[in-house]
Each structure stands twice: as C-alpha cells, then as structure tokens.
Image 1: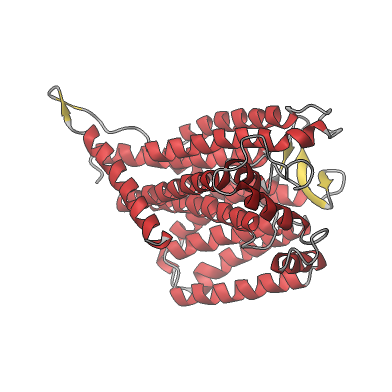
Image 2: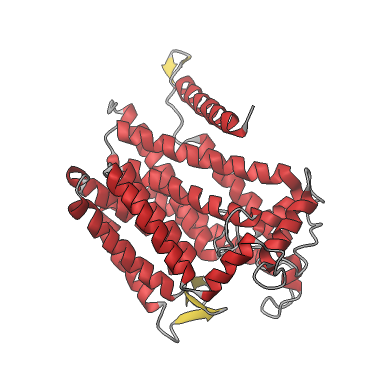
Length: 410
C-alpha cells in the first residue's frame, strides 16, 4: 500500500477516534450526562510533544556550537536555557491568548495589521533594527530580540480571515475581493524583501491567498494568481545573485559542496548516516561545526542523523495530526456559522503545514535552501512564542465551538 493511501486512512481513523471520545463524553454515567472534553486532546498533545521534542533536540544540536562560541560564553547549555526561557514565555503568552474571545481578535485584527506594518518599517531603520549576517530582521528588546516577520505571520492569519468575512458577498469579484488584499501583501512583501526575508514572504503569501481561496475566491482568479505568483517568485530569485546561487546549489549540491551546496550536502550526509534508527541521541557528527544552523533551520537533519527515519517519521506524523485537527476544528466552526473562527483555524493550519513542509523539503534536498525554521521545534524566541500563541488561539476556537454546541447552537 502506498503512502498516498496510508495517510488519508490514518487521518480518518484519528478523526473517528476523536469523535468517539467526544461521543463517549456525553454518554450517561451514573444517571448524569457527562459533558464532552473542553479541548481537542489530539491537537493539544501533538503540540506539547513537538515543543518538548524540540527542546531536547535544540539542546542536542547546539552543544558543540555553544561550547565553541564567544557569544554563549562557551557554555554548553546556553541555547538550552534560552530556548527553555522562550518556551516558558510562549506557554504564558498562549495561556493569556486562550483567555481572549475570538470576537476580540477579529475586532483587533485591522489594528494588529497596522502595528505589524509599523514594526516591519522600523526594523529597516539603521541603529534600530539589528543586522545579523547581512539581514536586518530583529528589534532589540534588551533581554531578547523580536523578529517582526514571525509576528506578521499570525497577524496576516487574523487580518486575512477578517477581510474575507467582510468581503464574503464580493468574493467572486477580482476588483473588490482580490486587489485590496493583493496590495496589502505586496506592501508586506516589499518590506520583507528589504530585510531580506524571502522565506517569510512566501509563507505569508500562501497564508493570505490560501484563506481567500478557502473563503470562496473565484477559481479562475485563484488560478491566475498562482501563475502570477510563480512568475513573480522566479523573477525575484533570478534578480538576486545569492538566491540564484542557492537555486543552482540545490540542483546539484555536490558540484560546489564547499560554497552554495555546503548546507544541503551536509544535511544529506546527516540523513544518510541516520539510516533507520539513527546513530543515537547526542551522537551526531554533522552538528560538530559541519552543518551550519543545526539548531535552527537544519534541526530536522540532526534528528535524522541521531534518531533516523523513525525520528523523522514521528515529526511528520505529529505535524500531520496538528494540521488535520486544525482543519477539523475549522470545519466545525463553519458548520456553526462561525466563519471568522473557521478561517483563522484554517489559516493556522496552512501556516504550520506550509512552513513545516518547506523546512522538511529543504532539509531533505527536495526544495532549495531557505531560511525557515521548523515550527514549534527550532530554536528562535519570536518563532516559538508566536507559534504557542497561534496554537492557543486554535484551542480557543475549539473551546468556543464546544460551548456553542452545548448551548444548542448546532
């Protein structure tokens, strides 16, 4: 049986399991009705496992780099404690976000979009935005750095969902539905490309136009959009020497393995060394200053080397469960005519699914090298905190769905 046949059956069984759990919750127990659970257990535990698994692998992949870096004070556990700090901050932020009604997020979305644009502008100002390796993407907060592009991913989910709900009667119109959102995304893209952060621009574009499509955009307009976007991305890559070099390095990493193909060639070596069960946790060789960004962009390669195919498959399945539950929650919200909630849930599912897919593809040599982290797992303060808040909003949507169901709204 092929993987294409296995995955739909696996996801279908997960949904049946979740539905049976919920039905069991309303079964009679001692003459009383037991209410269904407050949260989706598959969504909650898949996110928790990814966060904990990520913490372990960030520590494992960063030990050698931390020991040899002046920035970390030559402390082996430097990135572990920093990642743990951001993880705790993310959980606290998620706990607060869960308390906010979805209606409040909808009302605040236009103001959040303006705030996000403001941050994207000021990060480009010299002496305000922090530059690392030729990219100006961070704002110093003293105790940490804020990356506005990570925050913008969540903001675009909320803004695009609110925009689509407001434009539902006009979703077949190119002028009234598509052009205003396209102008907004082009503005965001222009600012992101100035940093530059091409990867964030790709993810944000997929989120925004994916939500428009799911909200009922005309199929012909969407098809035209795909063609224009593809041509635009090709032109952006071709007009930039370093992006063009990455593309050629992706096509044949061994042709120039010490320059353009360096990261990919070492990632592929890590996958090859891992085989089925890996060389053992902590025993990676590639993380010993061979594989750059081992604890951020190429975390999956270290997982592949240390835990093998089994570890990579576990990560893929956990993300598959997370995205599946996001769309299941969205479907229930639409059934309850809570369309903003449904589109936000779909947007979060698209975001986590697309970004994880791109990161995995880059690590496996299926896609050109791009600076995108693995959501919920890779080292990066802004990314972890925003991911936790996004999952919390998803859990809030699920919780509100259940409250509406209890009150007879379905």
